[in-house]
Image 1 (cartoon, rainbow, N blue to C red):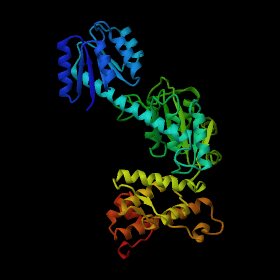
Image 2 (cartoon, rainbow, N blue to C red; image 1 turned 90 degrees about the vertical axis):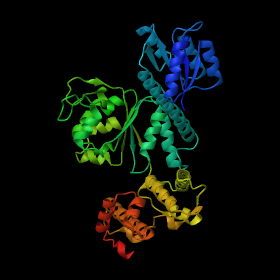
Image 3 (tube, rainbow, N blue to C red; image 1 turned 135 degrees about the vertical axis):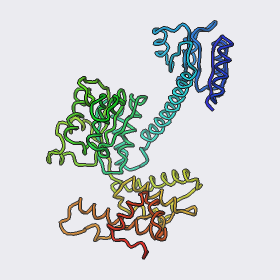
Image 4 (cartoon, helix red, strand yellow; image 1 turned 90 degrees about the horizontal axis):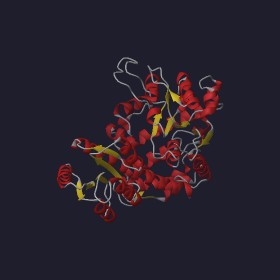
Length: 456
């Protein structure tokens, strides 16, 4: 239950507010002057303080200042019958969450309280995340002990406090988004918005609207102005994932943002200034994209001011057991299974596997194993992986890396489906749930790989 301290010298208003907020489910305490309020705030922590500006012996501005000295994260809402723009601005500059002029609608007050509580919750989460990231990046790294991941962590730590554009390069599943978030959370922009958008997951005509927004009437169905992701991220950071999949026309617009710090909404003719730090990520070879005419060379140089390459998991095998233990602990806690560990055979299999899906595949593998695990240990039988044969590695004379990778991925996928179907005794719906795909997708893969589930 959220707690609120009401500070007002008028008994009738104080009692009315206390009754109203109690009925709304808040735990309410009251004080008739600033000195009582400070004593109460010193003895216990309130989620929000609602204080009048005009108080005997000590005004609300002084109460606000003293509360912020005691706890900088304390949310304070000011109220007054003598409000002016200057007073409101002064209070907000001192850290007030918002300002109410009497008389006010109790529903509006409840809305402000809910917003203040959400702000306090997000601030607390940010502090915890920053502490966690600082601990990991400052001592070892983001879950890993290899020299490769330590080098990435060191680069992230160095670039975080600048406003330089960062390009994260690496295979799918290596954790590029985690590093992007770490850069934001360790930067001076950490209190502002962190906005992510996957450039490969949204059709081009929708992606432009998502990125830059639109004016009313810009296209059929645009009944109101839409604010795009760049405006939402103003003052903060935007993470453009899979930036290599952007179409050339959108690449030109991204380039303008990086060069001029301006965007233009669809259907608009007035540029909008934005102060946004851009972090981009790709699993593609952008240099090859430039040669093929699919990626703008000028945009590439703008994005790669500070390139960071995240190594694949197979190149840092010493991180596999550390990550595996982390995921075991995570999912054991989420599934309330108590203490679970990997046995020696399972650990050995994990370390020998080539992990084409990188850290994401490892996490999914551990999560699935935890679902199947009925004891305190996870063995190889719960891990839906198998080691490659020499034929699978070579594939054929003259095969390129892309072909080899596609073939290996298809073989691994087929083997996993067969294994799960055996464990679920041919029950396709249970198998689809374990594999985290819908029933239709699984059925299509059964046909593609010519798997007869009835004979398993």
